[in-house]
Image (cartoon, rainbow, N blue to C red):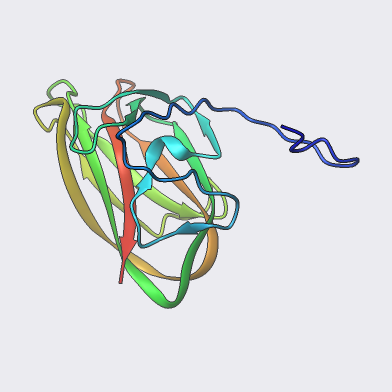
Length: 169
């Protein structure tokens, strides 16, 4: 536990990770070490605003991001897309949003205010633990980027939970 104590270096940890025996066995990624084409656990963010984590009843267990509403966001540093462009985005989501409440899950690169490269709309899926995998097309992405998921809605209510996301070619 001397990480980040070298002169001139500091470390800020703004999340809590809960690991359990019998889980997926994945090791939390380090900067620049996330594979865009593998499932990225939503709770493995590097920075966030407005989110919470909770236990999930989804297959594989573990935790999911919850209480996502308009203006919330999460950041995942160093996602490697490689030289062959990613053109698909998919996310495992659930929603118990009230009637008339829906929103967008948006993917942005390198800044939470950049133009989204893709998005999908989500409304009630039958409950906050009623999971669906939703695909979306995205603009071609190559290289290594910080990926931001941003959540946009015309209503102030929570509208989505996210368990994991990933990209495809």
